[in-house]
Length: 243
Image 1 (cartoon, rainbow, N blue to C red):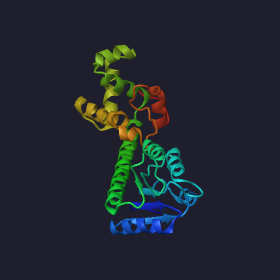
Image 2: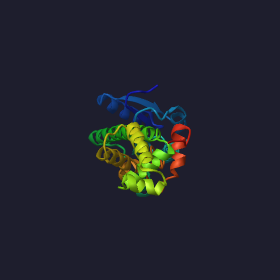
Image 3: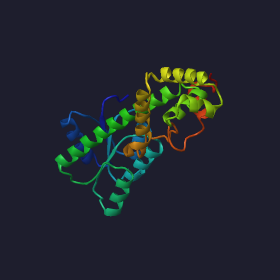
Image 4: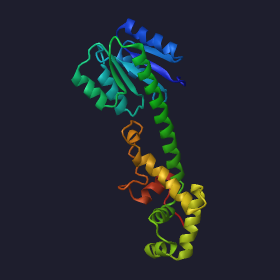
């Protein structure tokens, strides 16, 4: 089990692995070395924080393939390429796929140091945003279908009277659902509700880095083309019933 930020280095060349391991030690970071891509992919768990420093050419599974496999499996590990086989097309492919840096061997220690620091910081940021995203989803999942309907209409700026007319219920029913919805979301006023919604929208739509990260799961919550609210409510609390 890896719990502290760790530099995972994958390179078939033992001397090159040792260079990265020594630098990681100087940075007070743990380091795990792998001589093959298969060994790394077989062992790595998505919960392990840190970054990957990888060679492009590895006899069994190359660096670009490892990067693709991590993205495919939804692993958030940032990737730094450190290669003796640098060329423009490969560098472009790696960077377009989200690599933090693409460095050529032998790399200046300061350059690699900065790249690892950047990758470690990005990893921490993505994990923090993912945790916040999950928390917001759990909070929204407490709502019933009918409470979620009221939430959407309140966020559209509609009054209780207008909401009651659209839902074909009495105003008192709207107020009850609205009160229950706000209690579950732990907000006490419409401004607080709008602030909560803004954080959800920022988390789901406004953060380009998050949308492009492996953590992003395409959650429909409060997105323009979301699934019907009934589906969201049932997914969140096991039923679609409400007052």
